Amino acid sequence: MIESIKGTKGPFIEALSGLDLAVQEGEIFGILGPNGAGKTTLIKILCTLVLHDEGEAYVRGYNVKKEPGKVLTNLQAVLPGSRGFTWRLSGRQNLEFYALLYGLEDNVAKKRIEYLLELTGLLDRADDDYQRYSTGMQRKLLLCRGLLRDTPIILFDEPTTGLDPSSAAEFRSLIKDRLVAEEGKTILMSTHNLSEAQEMCDRIAIMDRGKITACNTPDRIRYELVDESQFNVTLHETPFTGKHEVMLNRLQEISGIKGITPSIDPTDGLQELSFRVDKLMDLSVILEVLLNYDLSIKTMNTIEPTLEDAFIAITGNRPAGPRRRFRH
Ligand SMILES: Nc1ncnc2c1ncn2[C@@H]1O[C@H](COP(=O)(O)OP(=O)(O)OP(=O)(O)O)[C@@H](O)[C@H]1O
Ligand SMILES: [Mg+2]
Image (cartoon, rainbow, N blue to C red):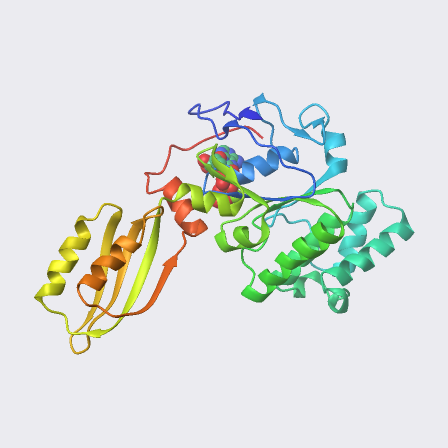
């Protein structure tokens, strides 16, 4: 639990506040939240790049502030903005440099680098200068660097931002299928991509202005936090008449219906009715009314709330908060 991380200069505002979170071994844990929510700050605290003022954070039982060395043997952060690669060296040479810096033995380093280049699909470009790498390749090399020390925990800050859809998908499966399923690593990752969080994460936390506002499996979050669903009925063509207007008024009065959007075509008439309803509503009430008005139904479906609906329900439209500061 990290109590707070405060500024020493300027307005005294907490960037993280009362953050209580525990990530289990072997899980992929996602952090979602609007810009400025504190996701990167949390990751930087855990990898000892930023010091928090109050509260405690532990990595495998080691206190982040008091035992940073032990923490760092267990965890590696992959921060996409981070530089540190030499443009005129090849990808492989850059990795060799870091292996030396991390104190890896020569033969261990060689094997590990070969393995990682193969894992990330960089092997055939490994001897090209780093300056010739595309963003996606640079990101892969960053991942190789992050995996050099083979720590059990990896932290990713927005790992797929800036990648094209197929590279992003490749990256996701690399994390999920290789790092977690095969190698048993624990992953904490921030993302703005809600379908990515839904697809990859065992649990997610939604952060807003330094606080966790929801923490659960993606499915539970979307079911529990959104109280509406959508019910669509398509109809065999029926001319739209005054009696249907009466029907719409009647439907609008039914408790549980929060909104109705009819699709009316000038020539083909009433084609579809789309209802926003309480997610626990008994939908047969709607069908009874439609049948009373002699409408003949072509298809029916309900659209479940998405993680995006839940995200909007939690973080909503709100004015931007005050600027926050803290010390590094
Ligand atoms: N170096 C810094 N100095 C002062 N304030 C900072 C610094 N870095 C971040 N902050 C502030 O801390 C708060 C949390 O920022 P953080 O970068 O953790 O947000 P985030 O959730 O990662 O946002 P984003 O989605 O935009 O990456 C913000 O209010 C931000 O302005
Ligand atoms: Mg960030």
